[in-house]
Image (cartoon, rainbow, N blue to C red; front, side, top):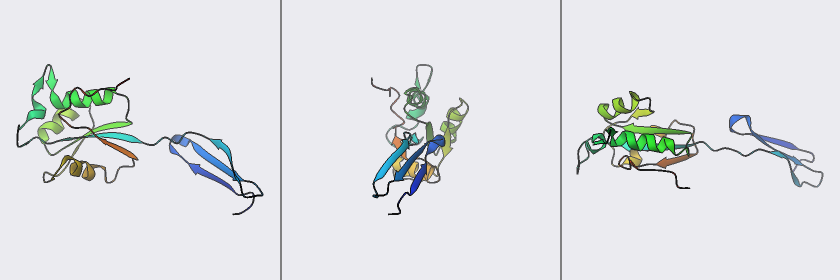
Length: 142
């Protein structure tokens, strides 16, 4: 331990955590700001489901199931970003034409988690929540 050593860790949004070590080597917190981890919701959305093909594009009231899921996930306010990851041009166009975040994946994935893994591999995030595309009534509980 170097006496009088000062350390600063840069965090998101120009926040920092600063430590100073005294002559005895004890770590003293000089100033601390909450480190905010970036958290996103990823909604895997496959069009060609085996049990119910195109179920995410079925109308539920005034919009398709996938849009309800996306909009309600955004409305929770829990995430820095919400993304739909799909292998379908139909779903891609539905989300993007309504101002949503969407990314196209390859078609051959064994699971929605694999589809998400492909989509987030180059994203700078700490927490990824997998929201199922057929959960149109998702909401934040008080």
